Amino acid sequence: MSVIVVQGYYPLKGEVEIQGSKNAVLPMMAAAILHKGTTVLKHVPMIQDVFCMMGILESMGCVCRFCDHTLTVDAGELTCTGVSKERGRAMRSSIIVLGALLGRCGEADVYYPGGCSIGSRPIDLHLAALRQMGAVIREEGEALRACTRGLKGTDITLSYPSVGATENVILAAVRASGITVLRGAAREPEIDALCRMLSSMGVRIGGIGTSVLKIQGTKDLADAEYQVPGDRIVAGTYLSAVIAAGGEALLRNASPGQLACVLNIMREMGARIAVSGDAVRISMDGRPRAVSIETSPYPGFPTDLQSMALVLLSVGRGKGYLKETVFEGRFATAKELHKMGAEIIIEGTEACVTGKGFLKGAGVRACDLRGGAALAVAGLAAEGETRITDCGHIVRGYEDICGDLQHLGGIIRREL
Image (cartoon, rainbow, N blue to C red; front, top):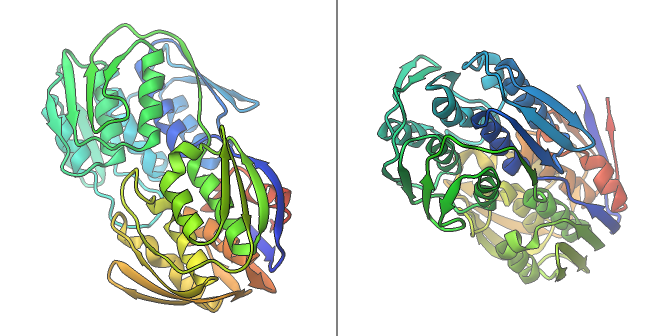
């Protein structure tokens, strides 16, 4: 099992290119199922979740070719409409093939999804919406058996702006008859990217970027090529590293327009940030100032950066507060930060963090994808050596976190 080793208390300096977005590319790969032809995605990150989704597509009969961050998916022939339990449990995003398979083939056999243990993350909204469109779904233990005589466009309102449910409805609506109006849709940039990719394939979608989407069903899709945007969560991770360790850095392809809330909070903490096109320049002197943060769906502060915020408040000065409103299991990383000297008190969905100005290196464990990355950031701001185990979580979403942080001057390596 691999271990990430970090030597901390050294300021960062350098520049790095941000990888393609994990959360954007996975639903795009599912969307390729809808087209009896070829879809080309560029700037695709070489991460475990992408390889896992490739395995799912190939098990269905798709032909995938991945070279130099360009992924070509030929879905001309589908020989299977099921996802094995092993593949389905490997990651959360496996569930988004459900809507695409129902639209393309009229049937799907999938399993309740796996992924990080950061909360319950129920899929009841997915299933209720697909049933409204005409799907018959039987739940047999962990298995989901779905079929339809033909999906029909309808008016759907989500009670919560679930990203996954929004993606499943969009994918199902592409091949449904008539128009689907989705109200209460998630507004995350990854939804925007999916809609624009489908538009390039010939799908008519109104309201892109808003909470009300109108999708015109069609049977005529075209071959398309689409560039995956930069990963805003990876960018937020490396910006957090500079704030925690001090120094300055330039991040290219950082999608700063998607990080407005995050950048504003980082400025409140004392970071100097300048945006130019798709690049972000950040510099930090001294310790972060204490602030209050509340996670929420986009355009609010992303739950995926909550663990980073815990680190920044821990190495700052004063008493800060953090409220988690999306996933109740996100505070698991606090226990690991305690080992490094952090003073974090959790009460329900709220954390009170008393900044100590620095942390101390320790042996810690990555509890989930983003929490593991946050521990790497914490190690950069800690005295001595930090050793992070269970790093398999981290490679699910970061192509080369050690190499990227090395480019920024961090002393970090992965030991196999």
